[in-house]
Amino acid sequence: MNKFLSKKSIVFLVAIIATLFCFYHFHYQSNEGKSISQELDPSITIMDSEKDYLEYGGFTLLVNQQGEVDLYENYYGQMLLETPQDTLTVSFGNNTDNEELFILKMFYDFEEVSFRVGDGDYDTEFVFNLDSGKTIEIPVQLDSNISRDDYSHNLTVGIYQAPDRYAKTNNVMTNMFGIMLNYEVYYESEGDFLLFNKYQNNIKSLNEFEFHGLMINTDFVNFDIAYYPPNPLKGKPGEELKLGFLANVSELTDEVLENYVIVSMLDWNQIKMDEQPYLFIDTDKSIDESEVVEHGVFYITLPDEVGLYEFVSFIVPNPSNHNSNENFFPLETAYRFTIEVTE
Image (cartoon, rainbow, N blue to C red):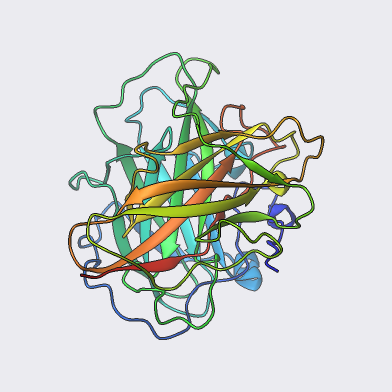
């Protein structure tokens, strides 16, 4: 049986949060589609990681408004901005024993968003190398198409390890391959959140089943254990592929779990789920248990081209609640696996 570890215990008093495991000290087939995005912009800073974080290992992540030096400012994961294009600094520490390739992804209200690093071009990703024991500070600006308004918005920031590799040849599956935080940003004062795409399929509550986190697989019947997904999972070009999810993220929040959002990527680009950019799922209110596991299904459309594609999903609990010390913790990712599209 798979059981996720609670990440609450690794939250520091500042908003830097370390995951204690890292991904892939194994041999992988190279994903030649991912390489370093550009020469490092002069505005990017690389420095030695702080000693305390090196002792914990794993990764650290913090997002701050440019110019802020007090790390306590973002302890609750909220940012008051003048405009959506305010420069933000993404600070990421590689406190593992290995130099690695990483990819930075950003989502605004759970939709993949373009951003630029320094004076570079806008893109939906930034790929970079980072040595062991180093911290990188990346200044970013969100797409100019995003407008200021009176609402609160979810800004999800994730950095993932080894975007140039596939999980296909891995003998040990893992969901520890990066770190993600979900910030609340607003421009005047806290407002309501705008969320759409309510999940329309039936949710099956598994109140006799013990599981924590998010699992994406092809198991639609047997729920005595959380099965890993096939790796690789094979499909045909353009096929509508059915996938299932198991979800229980009650340990990610001290609040009552009302709903959650699931977002998926294929080869590090957001992919539609049931023809929507994300799934917004209400928990089963008929079950009077805060830690019930839920199962649902969704469909994705496979690419038209034959090849290998890396599949990644993450989950955000209570996305329409304002951030606070009760819910600002690292997000859960599902076990990463490869989809092989064949004729």
